[in-house]
Length: 247
Length: 227
Image (cartoon, rainbow over the protein chains, first blue to last red):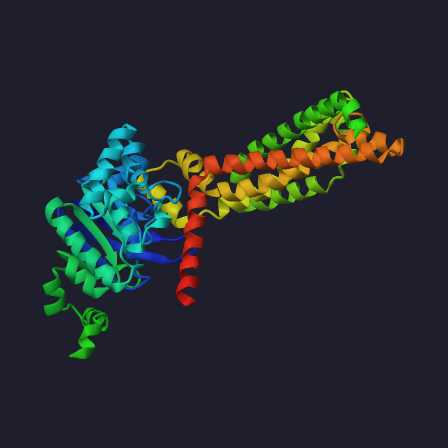
């Protein structure tokens, strides 16, 4: 369980990105942070692994305030998938997937063995393991990034618009793959997107943010669709679903 | 040609001395540029200051520096160390900007994602940022290598032996063959060191070649499909 208690973030330039956030993210489910750019959703996500420090309030993981934990050790326990795959261009695919186990001292052979298994888990041919990231397609790179995030078997997986940079066909494929994976793994997934369809497809819980980092509505997709809290929520969902134009 | 045969021992001796004077400054310049290049990128203020100092250093003419250096660092006037120290300063002056730029050009997303994966700052610098800056640093090092080999010859004017000796001696005796030997020898040393650097790059940065090959293959594929 991840808990935000009265969390605010004011950047050095004075912008208030997050304003007094209270939120509980349940374990073993997919929680989607939905919002347009400037809604603070990525900032909030990055507070969970201390890539961003709150200026007020506290973030708790399984009841412990993470402000007291070593950030490097914390990050190794939390999987992270960025928008661009963020893979190390100078390491082979296999070594990229083995990154976190290697950092925590797992011997090279064992880490690579685990990495090879994970390539299969995310639907990639083992033979790709010896290639460099530049030799893969965008979709393949995102799969490798997911495998890398899973390598140390973390309980929490943070995904920051992970499928934002791939084409719609590949994106749909990756979304289905993630659903399939999650139904077997049961991780606590926090997924950031600005895509309403993606949020409703993947989220057990959807948190819609207003500009300025406050929650407009949080609930199951059906709740947001069927019972929007206000005009902002209704408008965001309507505007974000291009297929509704066709109706 | 017979002069070359007759003087082969002297030529080889000066060539060896030339290499011995060239290699340390290149390595020292590289080694010092790493922490200073890091520092230059770390803070806004240090970048301007360090790069400015580097620029000024490189503007000092070599001959006066060779002459003044003994009184600054307390060496004897004819000590080869003077040449090594002076050329190390030049190498550093050139490498500082290259290393700083190379480190600054590393993809921020890659650094961010390495941090998120749990790299500490120290480990991330040595195993992620520095290797990724490698191709830029290597390019700078090749320039420094050639320039250092060339500058070593100036040391002959203050009596520190290298292939530059043949320039002076040949000029004083109006004997072009000797000058030519010094020139060809210097160029050969520069070429060999450059070749070694390229080789080291291939061994240490195998991924950089792959990336280029992929780029070329993509261009080729496009050209073929358009044709």
